[in-house]
Amino acid sequence: MEHTLPSALPSTRGTSPSADNGELLRFGLGFNTALCSTTGAIALAFAGSLGDWMGLDTRVIRAVGAALLLYAPALLWLRSRTELQPWHGWLPAMLDDVWVVAVATIATAGWGLTTGGRWLLAATAVPVAISAVLQLAGAKRL
Image (cartoon, rainbow, N blue to C red; front, top):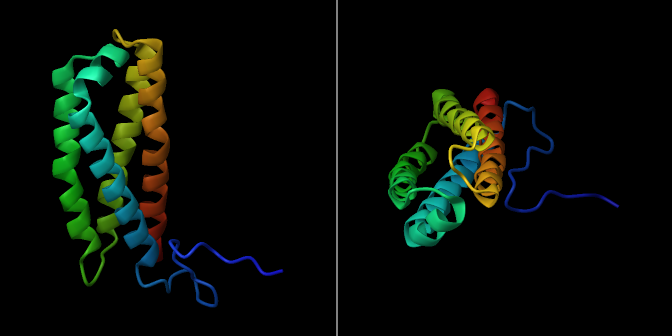
């Protein structure tokens, strides 16, 4: 029985790791775009409820949500380049790494967060870390 990748994932079967023509990087950038757009929209739409539940000021949640929604088009622009460059993956991955470290620091320190707020904040680091790995791996294949 042969296993195949889901159609959403780029396939490099029968090619060298460096011959994916940027498919993995485009996938990673697309994943990051969807992640930022979704998280930003949820943060703006539910800032009051999230603020109460997490123990955060609503203005902080709105600012983060707005920043994510402003960042998403930049990721989409990078993804749409005809010819991808390695920095198209390295730069967003570095920013993702900053997010993961900041979230880990804030969740660990607490800074007035509720227990649920700490867990929710920490949970955001998982898909962001996955995004960073996809983008770094994609950049390396260019």
